Length: 391
Ligand SMILES: NC(=O)c1ccc[n+]([C@@H]2O[C@H](COP(=O)([O-])OP(=O)(O)OC[C@H]3O[C@@H](n4cnc5c(N)ncnc54)[C@H](O)[C@@H]3O)[C@@H](O)[C@H]2O)c1
Ligand SMILES: [Zn+2]
Image 1 (cartoon, rainbow, N blue to C red):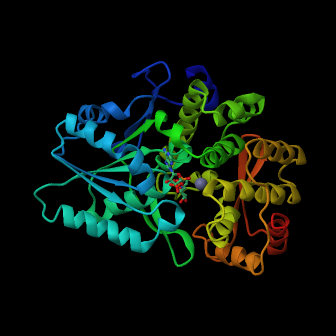
Image 2 (cartoon, rainbow, N blue to C red):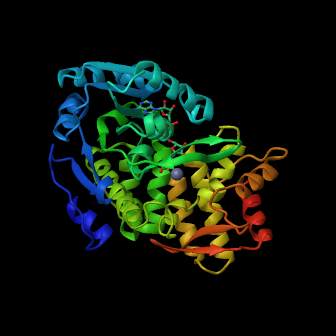
Image 3 (tube, rainbow, N blue to C red):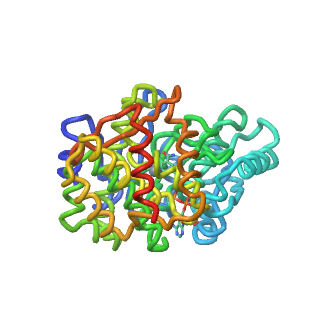
């Protein structure tokens, strides 16, 4: 695993220790005073309290944000693990499962629940986000604004959250029909990724997570892309423990290296992670939650790569390879058109926060593992590729 990781990220500084078992990794994200480790492995939930205490978290109380599905499966075990480490009070707060719950009202209810459980400054809880990207994004935002910020830990339970959303500190909710428009940068103190928790995922959610993994390979790491092509994609879909640990660790390391260079998304470097997201986000919100985030991004990557081919910045052969991988992952490459959908997608794209000063901005692949940003693309071409994925 270490060899693969090193080949994926070159000679850059990377701290990985095999701390828990053979199939485990520990990756540090170096953000100065906001640095934190990401522990990836099996059987971490039973020792969660110990892990938190050994990372200096001395809080007496914990506030767990989760949803009925994930909380129903894992909350009791989380509570037992925390109580074993002498957490005094473990309060649970649920938000609805899925993207529909990632909204201002649920954010507000979460803040209200925090205030009700912890009405005075006598006890500042440790907030633990037990769930996928929705819980992580909404919960990290609430933790960041309650009392001007209380410490929080990400405990990702989806493949997508493990490889992407639990790391990097972008936390937000959807608002006014725009994805992630209300939010902040807020880094967790620690990420504890117990891969055993992925075993209860619906296969559709596993497929959805592979979309972000294909994204990393497509624009950040040719070796990861080729590893998926060689057959590890199917092993990943089957949650093969060795391949799963290896690939989650690679993705986290890739994301950590990107975020370290551009934590606050000011230098254009972090934009690489938006491959497929401009059109994908437009589609995700316009399709009335019929698509998961990963599915929308898969379609968005196809549309963006078609745009890159039309603009002459990317060879057709990359588009063919990407499409093959997306199809092998069981992800869609198009979405059933409906009256008004095209207009809604284009409107949502125009409101996207990535578009500044009226200019459109696209992250386009140039070859496997490489990308460039292109601004002010002719809208007619953009419309053409959006139409090409709706039929
Ligand atoms: N902040 C970031 O950097 C970032 C990056 C990528 C994606 N995101 C966001 O992440 C969100 C998507 O996250 P997601 O794909 O994890 O979706 P999700 O959080 O909606 O979870 C998907 C479904 O899986 C269920 N689930 C979660 N864990 C489970 C488990 N272990 N067993 C059984 N069921 C489980 C959930 O209840 C839900 O129904 C989007 O809102 C997207 O915008 C954020
Ligand atoms: Zn994404």
